[in-house]
Image (cartoon, rainbow, N blue to C red):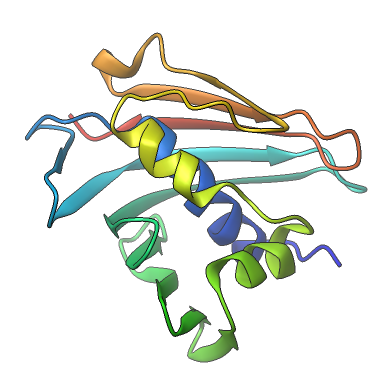
Length: 164
């Protein structure tokens, strides 16, 4: 089931946001115990109808445990995703939804499990082979990344710009 709006973008972004960060203090930071990235993302999903989303984000953690927040143009928190080994939750407008895992959360919001581990590799500037996904890291040094899901049932495009 596809869900529009913030829920779709939140989950999809978890997987693809990682593809945009680099290891600099100006755009983001990474070490084995602390990872943090901020910026703006644009997501377009080729569903019926086509869904488009853009928001500022703040991502902390790694594929095993983390938090992803999305913000309105006025700076208020629009949605927050938290995940760890015990499960995942999505909070929007005061409503909290619980999921058994981050994979279940991404499946619920986008209709497919998203490659969270690959996203965090992308954040580190790595490009692991990820079935159904194509990432472009060529402009990562300038804080920009793009990724495409090639799946015919739900193609999507994500563009991320990290804060300078």
